[in-house]
Image 1 (cartoon, rainbow, N blue to C red):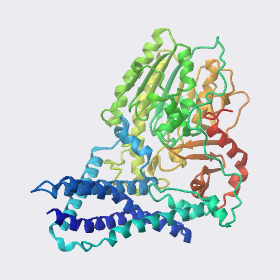
Image 2 (cartoon, rainbow, N blue to C red):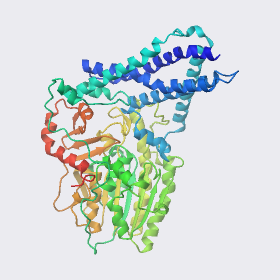
Image 3 (cartoon, one colour):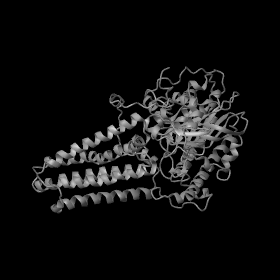
Image 4 (cartoon, helix red, strand yellow):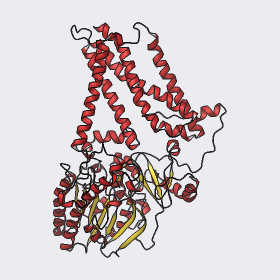
Length: 627
């Protein structure tokens, strides 16, 4: 039996290789630009990628075989189970990666892994039971398929197509894989050296592609180096906080102690805010300033909230998380002995806001509720928020009440009383959703926003009832936007278009002159605009990349920086583009106008924003690099 198992396994793993290869070849469908160099980079890599993916399964199966030699009756069982389970898990991984890439444009990465390894991460995905059932059934079918394939090779030895006893295939396979690997690496290094965009962009389609450079090698061969554009931005600096703030914060001792009510709303897209959908919010907005063209600091929650509290680009997240560095704004509150209560309808542990924004806030003052439908969480947490405001008002101390609402988040659930639109998507499964469903999905999200409005209305009513608006600052904004297939995507995190990055932003403070701000604003401007009320004398550049847009000097923002897990996007008033921080992002660079319409010529972008791009590079490094 042991010998029989050893005879058919090479043919079985060869068949699995072909199956993995078919899965890998799907990525060719995403390649829009081809060249000879692209072929040299892509095809060898796709041929060798399944081989590398198969190596762990082969080694584990062989280990199981040799460990079970003493078994008499079931000596093939350990090897069979090991082969089926490991091949199934790897194939599941490859299919999940392909699904992510085709739907969202990125592979399984640290961000994705972080979802599954961080407490609260999986719940933060917002999956509904129908979607979990769909995934579960697919996984079950895949497992049965791989079990059947193994059984066929085991039960019917004639299916084996590799002759036993021949050593040549086992020597040729790794040699061929090594040659293919080197061919792809050298082709990529050459494209990088001569700055040919097509192969650099194509390599992004391959999961875990190892990018190498060989400038000295090609230069030694006599290949002339390209005339690199001086505007290519350098990589961000050190990966630790070393310069935040740049200078010690100077504060007046006799500044007023205004209360702060900070309301952040998950996936609150700019389109969801209107007097028709959210009348209570629109009524309150007349008391303050509405920022009509506000960009989040991210197209995901992590970078969105990070940028609004820190006033710096979301790309600093990794360094600040590693350093456990809280924002200066929270430090100002604590220095002034504020009573702080923070509430979320998600989890403070995912993203890790308990280790960044609210790291210095005691755990007893952090309350999270992630059970049940999003609107149910908000309803429960709203009671806590209202109570914290009342208790804060009665305490005789200044207070800061923060709440992160979840109502507008996928799956856009809401109670009957929030049914503003009748013709909305009644059942919603993100796996089955299509572009034609976009309008109905938006109407469903609008009903969820109406529920958010009902919650916010109770907050505004309490502030008015308790006469707190005379000494309270109110900050109201979304963490990021949300797209409903307006430009080809659903949700957020997949693109940096206006739908996914622009959010409502309403600011109120005592003595404010109500109005509408029509120029560009950013989440990074929130703290600089609040600093005056905390007696801060420093220029905002000491602790942020934002501006006090309401100061007498009337500074005007020329661009906003928007980040996701590992990219930074530049949004100017006229043109927008992914920042070319490395050769790959330069190859992938697409310049659009302010409405996300693609432009064929990138020169006007560099001409208009040449100096701004240099400043943007400084923005990305100034707080982690000692000057």
